[in-house]
Amino acid sequence: MGKGGGCVPSKKKLPGAVAEHSSHDGVRGSAAAPVPVEDKRPDSAAGGVVPPPHVRNLRIFIVFYSMYGHVEALARRMKRGVDGIDGLEGLLFRVPETLPGEVLEQMKAPPKDPDIPVIGTAAELAEADGVLFGFPTRFGCMAAQMKAFFDETGQLWTEQKLVGKPAGFFVSTGTQGGGQETTA
Image (cartoon, helix red, strand yellow):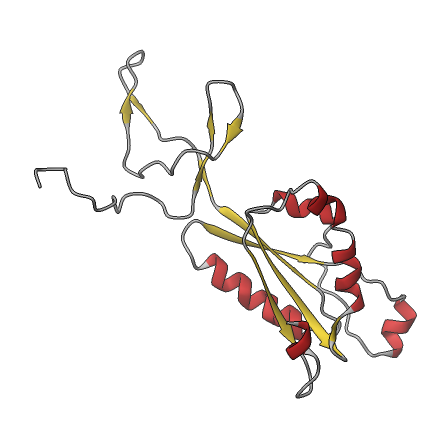
């Protein structure tokens, strides 16, 4: 093959990054492939160099429930792994607690980390580029708090706002046969 005629993709492109751009109709989106990092186009009006369009990381929401901190520790490790990939950013969210404070106190549950925000509504999942869900399993089922959150996603499914978004999950159980085999 001649010079530049190969079929090998350029290594200059940012894998997984989304180029923010405006199309001819003014709608912002990510339909175009990422712009090569070293792409500098001359600006004919100013005679200078036009920087490439703003490139943002793909946002992976890590949504979890953790009563005693085990699943939270897993979620933090998931975030570390996601953040370690160029072009990705992990964002931690806790699902709303459904148990009253006095019940959590009787169960000796530690306080929740205030630096991890509670996801306001399930509709916020539509803002993610991908989602990881984490929860404990109990008696063959996921924790009720996570089930309550999933029950709120009906409108998202009806409107197909999560179609094409990759998702995964991670679970934790304190006993052998504690439910992950049927929940996962």
